[in-house]
Amino acid sequence: MPCAAGDAISPDAIGRNAIGRNAIGRNAIGRNAIGRNAIGRNAIGRNAIGRVAESGPGALTGTVQGVKNLLVTGGAGFIGSNFVHYLMEHTDVSVTVLDKLTYAGNRASLEGLLADRFELVVGDIADAAVVDPLTERTDAVVHYAAESHNDNSLHDPRPFLDTNIIGTYTLLEAARRYGKRFHHISTDEVYGDLELDDPERFTESTPYNPSSPYSSTKAASDLLVRAWVRSFGVQATISNCSNNYGPYQHVEKFIPRQITNVIDGVRPRLYGEGLNVRDWIHANDHSSAVWTILTRGEIGQTYLIGADGERNNRDVVELILTGMGRPADAYDHVVDRAGHDMRYAIDSTKLRTELGWTPGFQHFDQGLRETIAWYRENEPWWRPQKAATESKYTELGQ
Ligand SMILES: NC(=O)c1ccc[n+]([C@@H]2O[C@H](COP(=O)([O-])OP(=O)(O)OC[C@H]3O[C@@H](n4cnc5c(N)ncnc54)[C@H](O)[C@@H]3O)[C@@H](O)[C@H]2O)c1
Image (cartoon, rainbow, N blue to C red; front, side):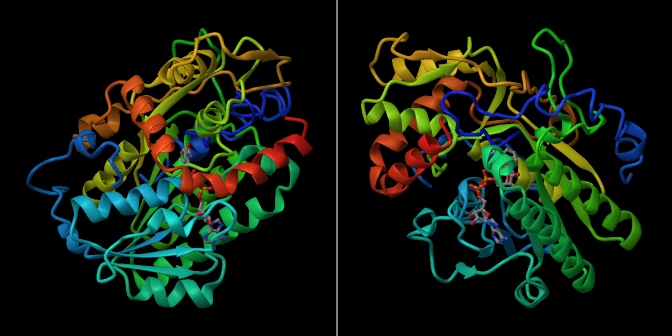
């Protein structure tokens, strides 16, 4: 699931036409290459966490399969920090976060965590001198750190290669050296997009067809993980998740940008008709799925994570407006941007049937209402980012 890009109303700017499907065809990196052969706290959602077993492997004891200490990369970012809060609330594990604290990382997202179970190390995942000793002393690595914003990848791809590819390589080498369990967080954007009227959804065997520098570097990192399993026996799993929403998401991204704009009295702008569809999942449900895979997933396997949350952009904007007491049509249309990915949709049957996971938020509207409430109640968290983010978008003409 892609990182929802934060342009005005369109979760991502990357497109079929911009980097066309035909140019980098679906079969270019086909099923045989990576599909079948793939080796073989906040107030939000506390009561709505994804369900996993009460006992047995994967139960929320925090000590299953010897996992007592976790290294979480990118744990000061949106989804990583939600995962850290999830671990603190629902398991016994101790957590070390390794995060470079780029513009997307925020110490404030980790405030208030118990000092005896939590440590933040500021450093680069591409720096083996930092990564190696942290990996040596942990039981498992959960790898969230990435350059994650599609729009940024179009303007300056280089950091995406450094972090998403070289950073992942550096971590894999450390996991290999010290024989540590590794879980790699990825996105459904590696699969490209679907037509609006396509009955299909992405599955674990959908061929890779990334559109943007962001998604292509995530695809590359997935392939590295698979190769390190095959070639070196690294004990790794991969998950590809759909668009996340929830607390602690940077205001550059689609949903928080619109919520905070409405708080500031700014009318949302909808690109084109707003028919592009994204498959939304609450970050808490992503966390419970990752914990499930980490503790009971099969080594070498890929699991798709999704919550059947398909919504088009127009619906999302109208839900935000009505959820914030504004008329549903209090937004403006602007000319569509060339080449938006049309539709993402995840089939998470494998994760649900093989590992017994289900999302806690069964209704997007409920999760969205709680997310709106979180941004209303946590203005000190997002306010410092807002002006700089908007002036960046203004510079880019968005
Ligand atoms: N946001 C989504 O909807 C979504 C969906 C599916 C998958 N994902 C994946 O989940 C992961 C996290 O996404 P997010 O939305 O939380 O991203 P984010 O941009 O909010 O957070 C990324 C974090 O990584 C850190 N980081 C960046 N470069 C680093 C480096 N070189 N070394 C150490 N830390 C570094 C940043 O400081 C930040 O804290 C990514 O791998 C992304 O591809 C995101």
